[in-house]
Amino acid sequence: MTVLQLCPLLPSLETALTTHHRTVRLFEQPEGYLAEHGGEFRAAITSARVGVPDEVMDALPHLEAIVHFGVGYETTDVGRARARGIDVSNTPDVLTDCVADLAVGGLIDVMRRLTAADRFVRRGDWTTTAYPLATKVSGKKIGILGLGRIGRAIATRLSGFGVELSYHSRRPVDGVPYRYVDSPVALAAEADALVVAVAGGENTRGLVSADVLTALGPDGFLVNVSRGSVVDEPALVVALTDGKLAGAALDVFAEEPEVPAPLLDLDSVLLLPHIASATTETREAMGELAFRNLHHFLTEGSLLTPVP
Ligand code: NDP
Image (cartoon, rainbow, N blue to C red; front, side, top):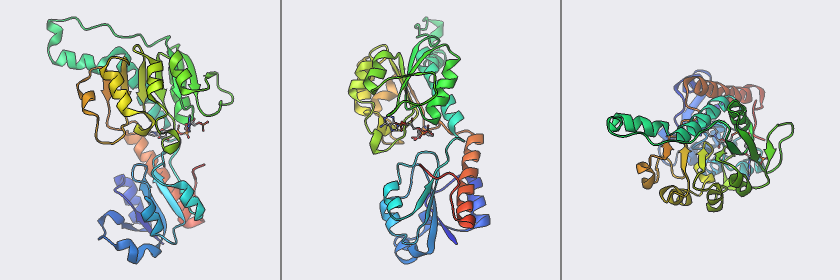
């Protein structure tokens, strides 16, 4: 059975694919390739960033499985796939630790102004000026937007800092010691920092609205390790440039790899190139899980970690 690969993937995953299965790299085929060959594929593998666009899915009449490298899958219309009986998988859990580690690192960075202080030292400013005071992290009120796998892992880590934790998801999570708050605005209003860990996609687009940012206020911090689409980015840029938000740690942006130009000049913002899961250990684990999903489907007929 031939596998359709939609984009470049981790080298070790590509090696496993080509060792075990005949694989066609769609991005190296001439235009119109699928019109002629689309009927040859029962499985496709792709990244969370690329997904399977509608026009590609429609050109694959015998497609039965879509395997994503990544936990987010909002780039694939899962409803459309389901309607055709196509199964979809992602790579949950194996990246949770690294994304949570980075969220906590980003929170400490912006509140204590660490990378800004590094720039201060490198510029030679320390020889003439005292570095401005930052904001304490331990003991603060932290709101987590989206208490899923990653949100819970962030909460576990932050518990060690003696912070007061509350959260918002669409429904309360059973068996957690954190306080549920019934809206993003209410969560932001009572938090010193808001950490965003919801799923991406249309359902959460603009969830961190201008009102949420206003509620967070001029002493508040925002950390986003979810998706750029979740935050009203123009409103965030205005809030940060006008001093109506104290700072932000951003791993994700609305139009990656584009970053709003005004943010480049702000010392109060940590800008990261979507690297929350980008460690050797985690990327290898993601590649292995993506491959095991594909292999299990091709040999046993089912995916190991289908999306809910
Ligand atoms: P989960 O599915 O475990 O958690 C998603 C959370 O989002 C749940 O708590 C869910 O709760 C909540 N949620 C969904 N819709 C809404 C809504 N409309 N309002 C409020 N809460 C909502 O996923 P993970 O924790 O594994 O991953 C979360 C996201 O992190 C991924 O979808 C991805 O976008 C992002 N991510 C980013 C990475 C990076 O490199 N920066 C790497 C990996 C993941 P409920 O359903 O109860 O509302």
